[in-house]
Image (cartoon, rainbow, N blue to C red; front, side):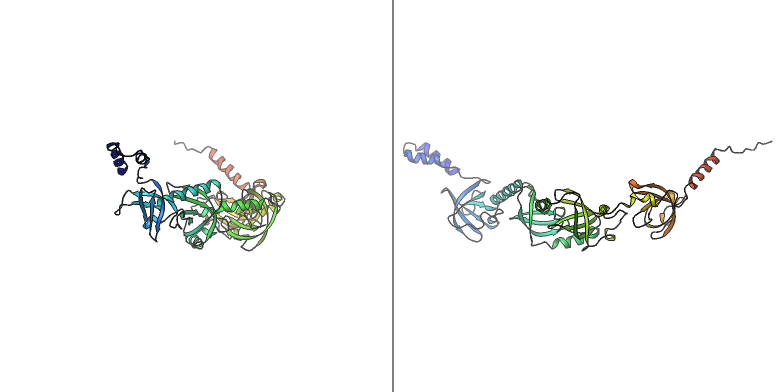
Length: 395
């Protein structure tokens, strides 16, 4: 800028002695770039850590050290004679050259390209470079991003019993150094945030393969994973669905491993398809035992049942392999207790009375007390409370 202003001042002072051609040339001269500007130049020389440019004959510039690194990869294989773009860092270094950077220019271009990929919803490759308990650190091109655990495909999702974080990390570390097909789901250059999803990329292929299935179809598949909330089943052409714990069997289940294990071949009904998410049910291929429960059990019946589980509010009791009932704590004792284990033990078998039966809601109420006993006791207590108390009169 100083050079241009000097020439213009000279033009004013020596207007009569300069030719019209020279005058036009000076007036057309562009001002020198300033820090932050993006400039284009001709590559004069290339070495491992230093690249020299000619900036339109106005001045020269140099890119060196870490500023040679380019996130976009656009200038990773440049040669003498190429025209390239760089960002101005300083107007003049110790050698009187512009100090330039590929890093800043490449950074902007790299993030612009990522935004375009996300907008187009196209798949891209991500290289896994590290892992933590929350997911995978990845690189798309030269930009570092993150793939959350929740965005892994069902095939790669860490199916760890109890959600043990240490075991999850061990599982995720196996992916370091591998490439995954992903879709970009969030990109923000200002925050340098890049979030990708393997599941989103997989869902596109899954939806195509699912076009041959509909809700109500029966499938046969292999159990590929058993977790606290259910079982994953592979079927068809690399499709996978989930049998939720509530859909494994008609009776109450605390652990899916009670019903299935990895490697089992099972039949299930498709009860839901939401994009690529397939919900399956094993129990719906079986007759609902609660439809005939009224023919087998009646209110007032004395039955034998095994306590399966205890909660502060009562005991879950197995009457047979299909029908389970609940004995509320108030039906186990009339005494005030602090621990339900004082009146019932898991695994023990007791005699109960059926006090309620609701087949449509799959509910059956049990009690240690015979129906009518409680009512008679309450009526007796009410009568005693209502009766006038005897009084003695002093002489």
